[in-house]
Structures are given as structure tokens and as C-alpha cells.
Image (cartoon, rainbow, N blue to C red):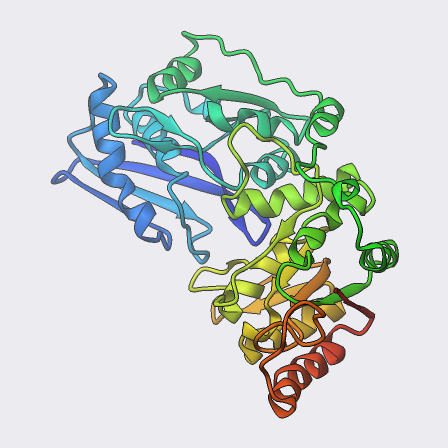
Length: 395
């Protein structure tokens, strides 16, 4: 017997429909998953088997073959556990095939059948709506995020048994309801505020000019002069995010698995401050399975590079393209992905290696050639890649 279950997967910050086909064959018992699954998907065999048995259902004593189409795109993550389990039980005759054709199903299973949250739910819900599906069945912890998409019935489930009883018609689950405007307003809360800063009038003026014009900025000053304190408050003087900008930023954070628990929307300007040991792939995105980098996580917000001279030159050079174009294209042999990357770049550095050149209270111990070697390469590189930039000295 055979069954078909619809699920979703992400590609970049968007999603696509995955058709999960399950076949039960009267041959020696086995369990195989095909369709370019990664290791997490392959390991779902053990999770699904244990979850079905611990839920009180009988796992078919047959050869189980699961195909994930389209088969030419690599499937990754643990979100296919729930649809695979439901597909196996549907192929065994426990669930009506007609019921499965109207829902997208996703979720990770624990060994006892609990359904755990997954990442990338918002773009998946948007794709399910575009595909004309009636609803989406997913972990209860992701229900609020999925409901943000609108135009779709969102059913959150706590465990496999609850999902099965809902599909079999034995249980009613109320669809998740979300007032997007209210959630958006409630989430617009900054922990810091620019008005808290006392003094530094010239630096605050420079930040206001840079923020109002969308310019990049470099702050130069000795340790303790307030460079980091001021920069962390830049998002609070930027214009509020629009709902469309918030949804775009939420997609990126959701796909990256960085959306905080019980948070449905990124409603404040992102602020990203990577450590100076970051690689170029970590900054702009990449990896064996490309993920958004810091420049994309800072989309519609601020990217802060503290201690700029400590960053490797090749890491700074890769910033040229996203700053100029507003997006990053990551090409791999199998695919090419584009991530948005429109951000305000803020950098901070000391005026010399010891940090006290020009400081009236502390004596600088650096020689003039050392100061020149320290400053010149980085400011030239910054001037080349940060076309519209302000430099604010702090004292």
C-alpha cells in the first residue's frame, strides 16, 4: 500500500512543498528513506519507529520505502519526522488518504511521540498558503509563528497521538488565531534607549546624521570612551520597522533557528555584533548547506564590527558586495541562494594599538610609525567599501 503526505522545506529564506511518498512492500522488513536526505533525515527512521510504537500504534512489519520529492533537492533537518510517521500509518490504512491532501505537516518527534518545534516555520506557512492548502499541522510551539502568515488554518499539536486523532476525526483542535497588528505592536520594545546617554554630544550628533541618512559610521576613541555603548543604541533612533520589513527579518531569523521562544515576529531593528574571529562564511553566509550570515541576520538593522583592526582583511573584503548591492549570493555546485543584506554598518576601533593616542588623561606608548601602520590599512579599506561613511572621534 502507498500514501502521500505534504510537507515543506526551506531553500534560502523561502520554502517549497515536499511530497512524502510512503510504500509498504510485502518483503523482508526494512526502512529506507530516499530523495537526497541529509543525516538528520536519515536518522528519522529510528525516531519515527520508536515514536509510533511508544504511541501505542503498530509499526508495519514490512519493507518501508519513503521517497521525498522533488528528489533533486537535498532535504535537511528533523522537521520531516511527523509527516513520515503519519505517512507510514496512512499507508497501513489507519488514516484516510483524502484527509492528507489538504494539509501540510511538519515537526520533529521525540522517542515517546512528543512533537518538538522546528525552524523556518513562517516561510513554510506562507508557501502552504500559496499552494492553496487548507491548513498546516505543526508543533504547538510553532503555531503562533505560522499563524502570522494568515489565510491558513494552523493546528498546533503536542504529540503524535494528538495529530493522528485529529486526522482520523476523533479529536477537534482549535486553529491558532493571531492579531498580527497587536503582536507587532507588543513586540516593538527595545531594551536600550539612545536617550540614556549623557554627554558625547558630538558623537551623538554624528550617529543621528548617519542614522537619518542610512550612512555607515566608524567611531574612533580610547577604551572606555563609549563607542560600544553608543553603537548598541543606534537601532533605537532608526525608523520603526514596517510590517513587511518585520516579516522579512522574521523569515531570516526563523530559517536560522534564532527566533526566540514564544516570539512570533522580529519587530525591532536587528543588532548583530560578531566576534572578530568570525570567518568570511560566517559573516556573509555559506557552509556545506548554505545558511544566512551575520550580514543577512542584520537585514533592516545594524551590523557592528567592534575592534575593527582585529578582523581579518579577507573578512572585511567580502563586505563590499552586500554593502553595494544589498544582498548576498552564495553559489554552490548544486544550488545558488540569494539572501537579503540591507543594513547600516557601524565600526569601532582604538586610535592606536595601546588605545590612548590623543587621550588627555593617559599617555600613549606607541611610536608614530606603529600608529600609522595600525590605522592606515583599515581606514583605507573602510573608505573603499563604506562609500557613505562618517568617522566620529571620541574623547
